[in-house]
Image: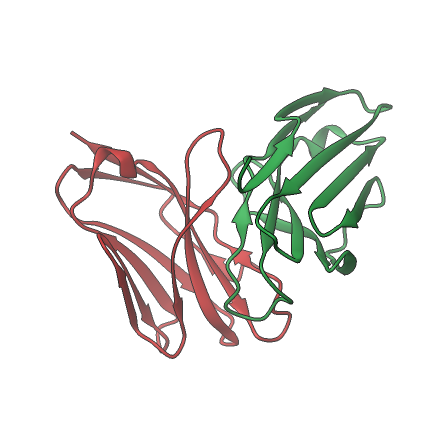
Length: 115
Length: 113
């Protein structure tokens, strides 16, 4: 596999469920990101990890819990979500310690529906 | 407060003609700008970028223009092809808070045969 992969591609869950989204990058990058894309809204940055350390939490509710066990893998653990959390969740990675000018490469996304 | 705006949600262009997608920004600290292209059921794909030290960057059929005084950038595609039909996002970042790419809402481009 090449690039950035995400599983599952689609997920339907109830508000009391616990689920996890997985992202894996095969690019040798050191920074990884979670974004949320809601209908008719811009992509919103949620979390940033650089060399496995979280460097940004963009005021995300605690029902979203990220985990980065190594530079190639990133998880987003979901617990007691709300229907308004239904969205496309995108993972991205970039090469190095982020500086301006860094290009991010995206996975295909997980389309989440919370009932 | 939306710092990056794409005011046209959609654009329709005849095949072979020029497509021009526009993007405005408000944060004068932005110094790097990117365009991404997104097909349905896929993640955004990097297309082209420009640094604030330049006012034009060209890559094949794609050219990005930056007007810093107007805080405006545009993406020109010429000639337009049916495979260019997609949603195009502009994004910007600044040295401060450098990891944070700020995206516009996207413009859906449709190329008509």
